[in-house]
Amino acid sequence: MLNTTTNTDQKVKGISLRLVLVLVIFAIILLLFLLITEKFVLEGGNNIDASVFTFLENYTSPTTTAVMNFFTFFGSTRFLFPAYLLLALFYIVFKKNTRRSLNITAIGLGSLLLMLLIKSIFKRHRPPDPLIAAAKGFSYPSGHSTSAFTFCGILIYILWESKVSKVWKWAGTFALLLFAGIVAISRVYLHVHYASDVLAGFCLSFLWLTICIFILRRINNSGKVDKGVKA
Image 1 (tube, rainbow, N blue to C red):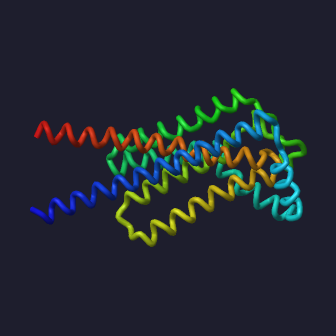
Image 2 (tube, rainbow, N blue to C red):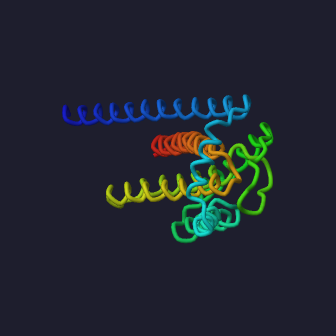
């Protein structure tokens, strides 16, 4: 009995520590997003953005542009809509989990709508002299960055819920974050977004995913409690 109580206390402490850590990180990312919005969008500061453009110009070449144009595709709706559809169908057809399919769809669609709403509020114009055909719409935050980090974030969450070893979980997490990061960097390299746009896109994605996962976990836990009471 004593061992059971001790194990329960340790689990509660572990959950509490994780919750505090998540809240601290959430607060930091939220403050960073608000700071970027104030300094770069509302006040019009662009010294850091200009410095990043200057730095990337040293690596500009036809080959690099082709590579970045390749990676930027994976943050577009032309890739993400089919990707979300396939992921949702996978859970419906193979996992028989309609709820997970709907959750994935809701998170992805909600992220898109939230990003478009913020774009329409701040209406920041895109950088001049893009290296590809001029992108449409406003610049802040980066839609490609937000969408890529959201999609990869969903995959990371699914990965950590799976039964694969922690080595593969960490490796997969690193690979997915690196991939989303390259997509974000490609937008700055191609001069269709400022560095502050893609950083804000990452922040927005993190905040949105954290809120969604927290809500879904609460709903799932409530459902389990209800089933236990009925039983």
